[in-house]
Length: 580
Image 1 (cartoon, helix red, strand yellow):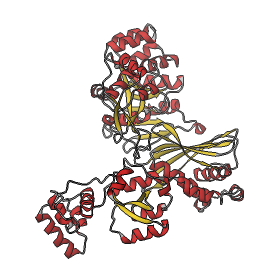
Image 2 (cartoon, rainbow, N blue to C red):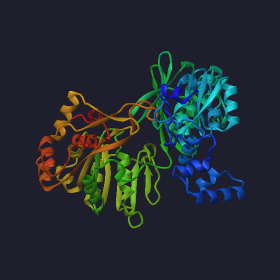
Image 3 (cartoon, helix red, strand yellow):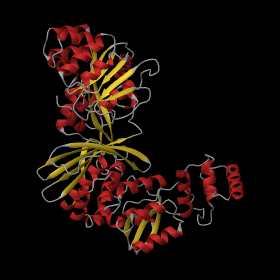
Image 4 (cartoon, rainbow, N blue to C red):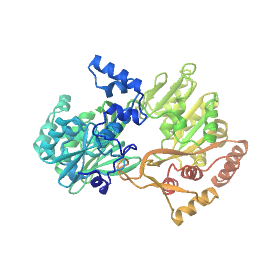
């Protein structure tokens, strides 16, 4: 297969510029590196001496010395051997090629089947000189191999993205029969979790693939004639795999055993948790089960034990708003409340806020449901309704434990609202969250919960409403012309004409979604004397909002459109999250 053949299918030879007069077949790797300015003669000679004395490969020595990166070495090898260097972030992996090579073999040789062209299997390898790897893959695929090159970490990432659970689970479903389910229901010993049964393998595969695809949740949903597995990635659900309905009972039973739930109870909702290890990462899995008309649905929340991103500067605050928010964290007392719907990132912002505080000189205490991440130097408490431990009771107990800073995971009832307000008035810095659509609604929500307006104004320092929008994939980002509706929305929010805006076109890196990761949009309202007067007089939300904008509040929609202007997200994504 010639390089020109690969270009027809989108696999260009991405090599450094080469002098046509140079005979690459006779040129050594060191000469390629020196000629392309990647290495000096002295560095090469030193590496050769070390390699001879230590029995190492020269390339390994160069990388260990920091004189060369693995990417540089791969590029030089591509030039030396005349093998095309493929960018796996851009090119599609053909399913018919992928099926020819088992995942275990692909990982063993860090090689990925790319396409079938002219009766040959185009195989992307980190080391195309690995004759044994080529022979093994040729024997399994029963095809002639045409090696291509890519960066090693790109190949590993592509293997994670493209080898899904479908193939492996299909092999196990036939073995996951009703007899297995009956046996598991009759035996509830924890040791069952260690049995390498088909259901356990399938569940492990589902979790493994979800972690590799950056999913935050896994939905296991029985339908009338199938079992649907969906992943929530960047806030949106995507179908991962569809299985026969006969696999449902075994999966749910295994899930309950691992989560410490009662596998004989199918009518009442249950929840549990367990730990998993995926690619050297420790994952905490929270499980919730509830019965539907077609059987029990389960949702698994995946939380990395390494903790969330806790730098406020990386969450999405605009520079001016970030400065104002950080000043609020320096106050000795008062109450800061975040508002937004479920899944809008309130807990992450709360964690990032208290993470900036002095843990040595201040007693920081939190009451959460559940405690999602553990932090050293912070006293964290878990809500336990069965033991009578709720938000309000815990807050009262906190007041006798000499706290400086209190974080209440969520204000859900009038009693918690009143106790939190009293704590802020009596000299404590209180953080919490409520379900509210915007920053003004946070204030009115406290009043609705029975806190007198003058108490709200005395305790409350600021409110902050937030949402999470998906980031445009940087690998496939392109400028585009927005629709008439999008242009009108942008102009209405900013008062400016629409600038050059971007969207993701879809690529292998983002699984054709056009998005990669998420970023927050914020609306920060700092209570001024004018706003306090309006709250005490119980004026309308619109009057308070107008005054807040006069006092410097940037509305949520405007903050989102500022992210659009920066090329971070799309207009449609902002409109999907902000409704007013």
